[in-house]
Amino acid sequence: MLKKQVPLLLPLLRTYATYTLSLVLTSVLLWLLVDWMGLSEWISPIIVLMTTVPINFVINKFWTFK
Image (cartoon, rainbow, N blue to C red; front, side, top):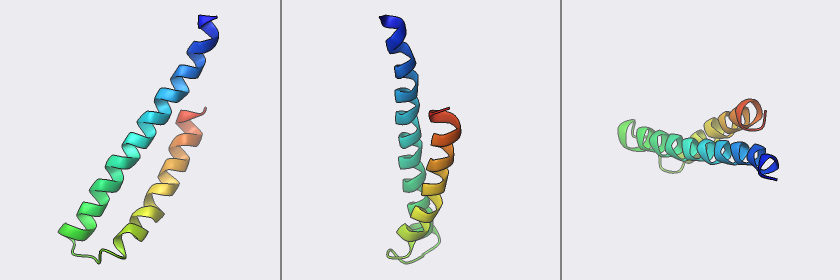
């Protein structure tokens, strides 16, 4: 019974790692765009969203759920 649960653990851990990476990437990109580059606080989240969503998709497709 334990052998059937182990394959479920790896994708779960990979999912948490992917979303943690996404959170860090989002925070860093927002900080860079708003504070360092001086972009608008209204435009920066849109740029970050258009950047992080495809990255999350690719990571989830090719690493998390392979």
